[in-house]
Amino acid sequence: MRTVHTLKELRAMLRGFRQQGKRIGLVPTMGNLHEGHISLVRKAREAADIVVTSIFVNPMQFGATEDLDTYPRTLIEDQERLEAAGSTLVFAPSNDEIYPQGLARHTRVIVPEASEGHCGASRPGHFEGVATVVTMLFNMVQPDIAVFGEKDYQQLAVIRKLTRDLMIPVEVIGSPTVREGDGLAKSSRNGFLTEDERVIAPIIYRTLKNTAEQIRSGRTDFATLEQEANEALSEAGLRPDYFNIANSLTLKPASPDDSELTLLVAAFLGTTRLIDNLSITR
Image 1 (cartoon, helix red, strand yellow):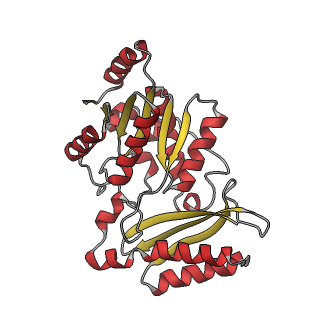
Image 2: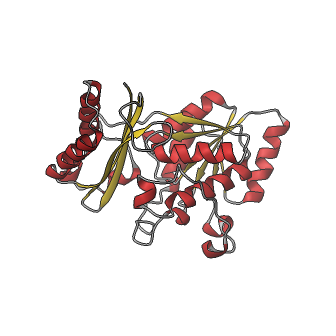
């Protein structure tokens, strides 16, 4: 496995692979890798000959009050994990390599509808930053396939829409959420939790599952179910950002006639913001 830091190096490496007729896969990450990320690399290995894993903490997708400065940077450990998982190439650019003119002067990609509501409402500009850097990575790597985790369901929807709308010839593959034994979705931000908070955190997934069971039992009073879920999270010591029941395709609020539903949640535990989701068929 090789690590490169510039677009020039990246393109030189990929040119050789393309000349050999290799199928190229991309796994975009912000580093501080855990088993969830590694599962994406393994999935990419199933669909491609060459796997490029990008490690870039993208400042454009962080708000002014969010954890950009404290977000863990663990490149050496990440490289070791990626090599063991079968990644072929790591692309770890600097901010200047990605945004040479600075953020304020950089072109941005806006994805309407899919970016609205849920995290899009709570984190203005977040998905604009995600869409911009993913579009750039698609252009830089020019992969045949790209793998993203389903843990961030709305992000996956944004990326699928931008790929369709901009006619980018990349197959976007979603990979199931990887969970701890108690159900907590694996996340880089779990490392910010205190021991006491870590004990509380699995209530998020339990609340998702309980709400899903209520829906499967025939309940369609979605607004009441959302309120009950928020109350359960609050009683457990979390500060809910949102708990929404949405149409899985459009991410609009679900109606009683919808058969494919996705439950999306974001909540603060201490200073750490955690997200999760659960999709069901009625």
